[in-house]
Length: 220
Image 1 (cartoon, rainbow, N blue to C red):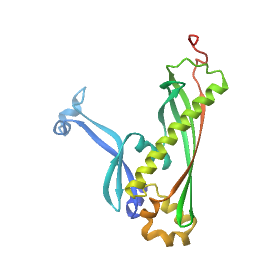
Image 2 (image 1 turned 120 degrees about the vertical axis):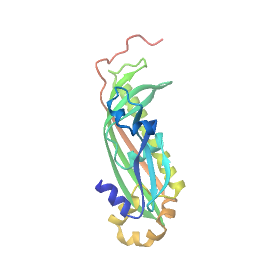
Image 3 (image 1 turned 135 degrees about the horizontal axis):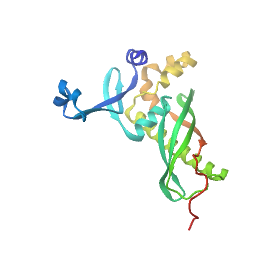
Image 4 (image 1 turned 180 degrees about the vertical axis):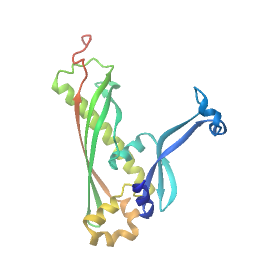
């Protein structure tokens, strides 16, 4: 709550988790709905509401919303469905740790955003014939994790630039590390932000592969 109040009073852009009601709103408001085994109405936390200067600007969902959470260092736990060879989304990885570090600098009057993400996960499920006891096979999967995370982060970053709205708090970071430079760009920051460059690094590590490490059947 304190973080949300801080973002609202900051005057810039920010995001808040979206809340959607599924089913009948009228039925959900009745006291009798609490006494039912199967509720007619349910609440779903989904997507992100984007605010700019205190006003709702738009909604983001799917990979774009998760990419935003990657940048904001708000990923607590999530699932990635990654490719294995020529099999699309054949392996599910449960990401249990993620840490994002951000650095903002100015080059020739335009910002450069350095984002470094470290993530760790466990293999949940595989529909691929793969020998998980081989280190090089694990590294291939880690590379797929890095690729998917990078795609989502870039998608989120580009969406914010198109909207000319810095809801990643990059401006606050520049103000913190270089107040003098910030004063030069503060007035037109959103437009300057939209012209900035992203330098992204993602490092993924698979902690555990579960009980199965070798394929149940030989590759054809």
